[in-house]
Length: 242
Image (cartoon, rainbow, N blue to C red; front, side, top):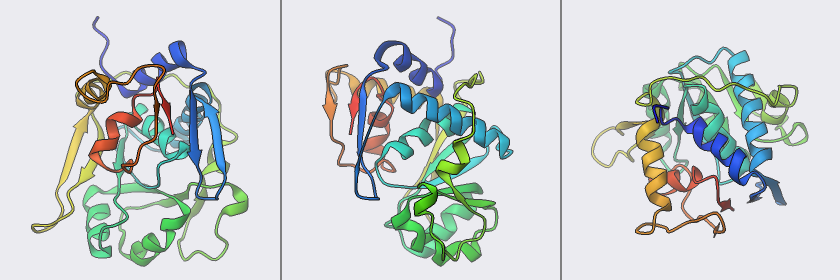
């Protein structure tokens, strides 16, 4: 009754109750990827261990520019679960807006899907706080001629890490995620969301007066995961999420 509402708790609940639920993704590499909630949880914990080893601390902001897919799904848990802040970036923004947002948020690392590397390359020289660019791919697909310095392969980053991780406990009002407006009036504005508010949003998303999801639901999300209308769905991890 007194446990804080933390995003890591959603994942642990799913492991206990819906570990065999399948997540299906169309990868940017072109093929279909399938695995279970349990597989996702293990990889999220590998990511958490990798981030700790990179020196990521509670409160550090990590940016993502990625499509809807299993690797992006893992970032939702691996980043927020250790107390860092998941900052989803909209690839449709103008370069000067992306430049402003990444610097204003003080992103320490950027996770980037392959199609969006040119967008980041165009602004990389202006990004003051970014220590490295983690490409969401395997070693074979890591670009050999990228202009980005300190390019890190996601699969190589996590593959040697343990699948066991003890999620830290902290105040449920701690920031879990960050998103910026599109800057239609002046510079984009950032909004922080707490673990508590994000979980309550996910719960309501599952409810009868919203998306009415249950453990047998199969969902094909058309809204990108950087958008507010997809956040709750991505955290409804007891469902099949495609």
